[in-house]
Amino acid sequence: MTAVTALRQSIRNSHRPNLLRILPAFLLIALAVAGPWLAPHPIDAPVTAPYAEPGGDALLGGDQLGRDVLTRLLAGGRELIATSLLVAVLVTAAAALLGALGALRPTVGRIVERSADVLMLLPAVLGILLIALSWPGGGRFAVIAAAVVMGVPYAVRLVAGAAAPVAASGYVEAAAVGGERLWHLVVHEVLPNLRATLLALFGLRFVAAVYVVATAGFLQVGPQPPAADWALMIRENAGGIVLNPWAVLAPSIAIGLLAMSVNLAASALVPQTGRKAVTAL
Image (cartoon, rainbow, N blue to C red; front, side):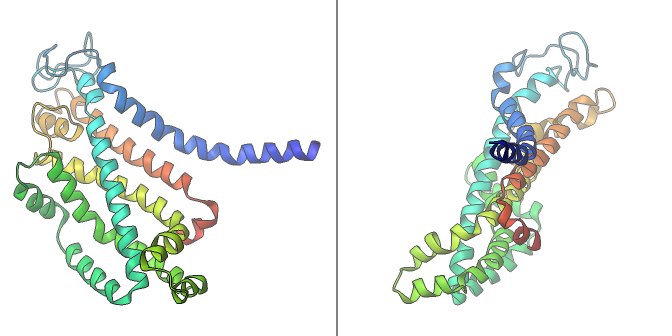
């Protein structure tokens, strides 16, 4: 009984660090999702003088129009997280399918890799502007499309490199000789063996999506005023940073904490058996 108790305690202790690494991301995302309901003031209502210092009804002071910075901070994270999450899912899924397909079919793989090389030559900011400004109506969907297009080339190269040895393994070749269809090989033979790589990739692409979406917001090719958006807050209040630094620092810190906490959580979820392979990539 003592040995069983010790085993349970060791298992519990082994999971504790992972929980501690996941908890910050969970709390921050939960706060951002519930933020609009926790906001103490209406989002667009002036409550102080422009760039007022923290105090009174505005714990973080006022922005360029006298609106409560804390209110807009609480309300500005939900759309950023939802957009970044969608981009990370789309990029990871597209890279997983293209990378596995390219590993199984070398001719397709060469076409995919050459296309990725061409797209990687395009600077990120220029790509965002070209796609977002040419998108009918612009807005958040244009930002999502730009983030996906700019993110897939990097992700597909990573997945293709990890999928190549899996596709060359004996059990995959045996399944192919046995007459299994290409779709079956991709979904049932290759991708299940790339879970560690895909989880790590998802965390990286979420972080990249946060910065791409934030850059688009700063360039005003995404959400437009008077929307509450962290990146938009930074652009709008940059001119008054000396008067009320929190109008710029608060959303900047929120973006940085979001990116770091989600990447930390994703690395904690990577299976232990796949960590060496992910590190090697």
